[in-house]
Length: 452
Image 1 (cartoon, rainbow, N blue to C red):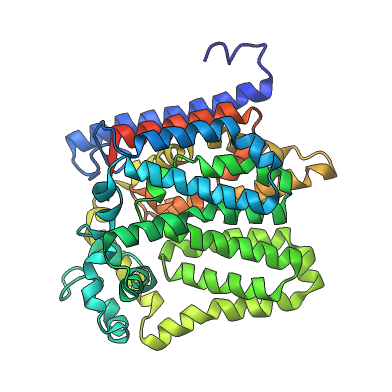
Image 2: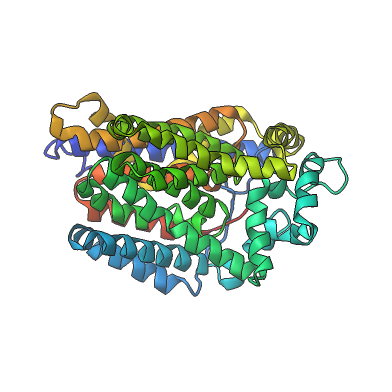
C-alpha cells in the first residue's frame, strides 16, 4: 500500500486508493461497532455484523470452478470484452456471470447452496400449498401480513407483493417442483441482469464504456448473494425494464417502450422498495430526451405497459398500498423494530461496499470526478454513465434513510448494486481491480455462510 501511495504514483490513482481505504475503514468500523452492539445489547440479530452470515471457513464442490472462472475472467475478460462482436459479448457475459454465480453457490454444495435456500422457514416455497386457488389467495393476501392475524405469512412472503411468491407458485404449476428448480431459476434469470446493464450503457453512453464494464459486471462480489436469494431475480427484472427503456428512447421503439413499462410494473409487484427504480428510469428519460422529443408518443405505450400488472392485481383483489402499509406494521413488529437505526443507517452502506467491492469504491470516486469536472463534448459518454450510476446511488440512499432496510442489504439492495458496478468502467488497469473483486468474493464465500 505504501508503494501505491508513493508520490510517483499518478494523483488520480492515489485518490482511487484513498477511496478504497475509506470503504475499508467503513467496513472495519461496521464490524467492530456491530460486534460490540451485538455482544452487549443483542439488538442487531446478525451473527457476523454487518453481514447476515456465520463464520464458517469451508471448501466445496464449486471451489475449483469458482477459481477457474475468476482466473479466466481476470486474464482474458478485458481483452475479449474489447474484441468480441457485440452480440457475442452479451452472450459471453451472461454465460460467464452464470458460471461465476453458480460456482460460488456450489461452494456451499447443491443442497445448502442452491436447492435448500428457497425452502427455509421464511422463504417462498414454504407457502406454495396455500396458493391452490390463486384468485382467492390474492383477495385474502393482505389479511395475513401482520403478525397476530390468522396464519400470518412467513417474513419474505409478507415482505413482498404477491408477484414474488407467484413466480415460484407458477414454476411449481408447470412441473418445476422444489428448491432445485427454483434456485436455478433465480441463478439463470439473475445472471441476465449483466447483459441488461450492458445494453443500457451502450444505448445511453457508448459501446466502449459498456465493453469496459462487462468484466466487472461478470465478476462482482454481489454474485455471492445473486445465486442464493430471489433478489437476484428481482434485480434482473428491474435491470431489463431500464435496458428496454434505454432502447425505447434511443431507437424510438414503441415495442421496447411497452415492454419496459410492463417489466417496471412487474418490478413493483416483486418488491415494494423497487419502486425507487423510477429514479433510474427518470435518469434514462433525461439522457434520452432527444428520442422523446422526436417521438413523444413513446410515453403512451410506456404507461400502457406500466398499467398492466397494477390493473391485473387490483382486479384480483390485491391492494398494493394496503399491502405496503401493513408491511410497515409487520416490519416493526419483528426484528426491524429492534434493530438500531443509528447503526444500520451507515452499516448498510458498509454492506454495499462489501457486495460491490473495492473497484466500485474507486469507480464511484471517478464518477464524482466526471460529474464535477466535465471539460469537453467527448466526455458526454462518461457523463451519461456517471448520471446512471448516481441515480442508482440516490435510490439506494433513499432506501437507506427510509429505515425499512436495516441489515441484509447485501441481498436486498442487489438491484441497485448492479447499477453501481458500471462505475468500474472508468478505472485504468482493469486486471488489477478485477483481481481485487474476485479475491473478495472468494474470501466471502469460503469464510462465511450467508443466510437470511
